[in-house]
Picture: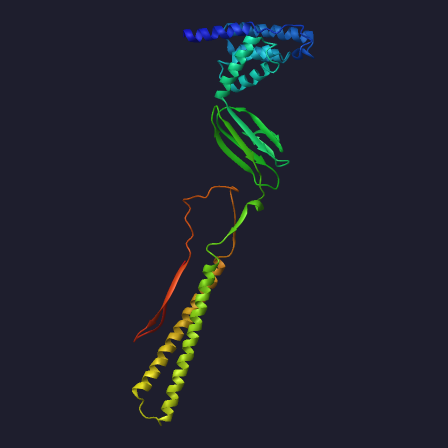
Length: 336
């Protein structure tokens, strides 16, 4: 309690001695202000001092604002700052501190000017500094619904700490919006760049270009192998028929029977190769289609890659000959 009383007493001592002098028509802060306006401002200023002395800070602040409407004097700004200290208005305090110090110590005095510097440093630690830049000509930049500037331009000022939303818009461009917490005592800088939809359009494939074509090539190889086996079976059957005919229809020997069986195996395998090769060719064609370039739009031109996003697996496939007493052909599998 004693500390609070001492603080208020010090505030009053500084405030009640910061009185603008009338008739200062040659000073920069009195230029263009008539004696009548100065007199009216001084009268309201003294009323504000009386309210400040009585601890009615809200009334004192309003009196000082009224006085400023008649005379924009640094000393009135200074006393308004002292009234605002108890009203939780750090942003308005900072604005009036800058106005109080804009002509240096002369319109106040050295002690009050030094106190204003200390107050400014204290208030700036309670506020967040925001720097926004945009070079896209004609873009409208808004923060929390308030227009900052029309680009190209720059905004550099203090705001209350906490979350703030900055939006930049321009016809034909994607809207740029960001919401960030802006901590007290720190500088948050944003260099806004706008992009057209085409600027952020990229193209990708599911897999490497070689993978689908390798499947197509595999299907072609299997089909060609079937053709070779088919030709081999044809030769075996022709040899069998020729030998049987030359022997006058006698019972075939074991060697001749083996030649016919060999032809049958090759023929069955060839049919299997045709079926498998055709299926693999069709699958390869489907994979080629699925692997076409697909457009997508980046949310950020230089955004980080999400490590949790699952990777697209490449298709896997394989084949093996299937030859036995009961079946002939080729076994294959494909997964994608």
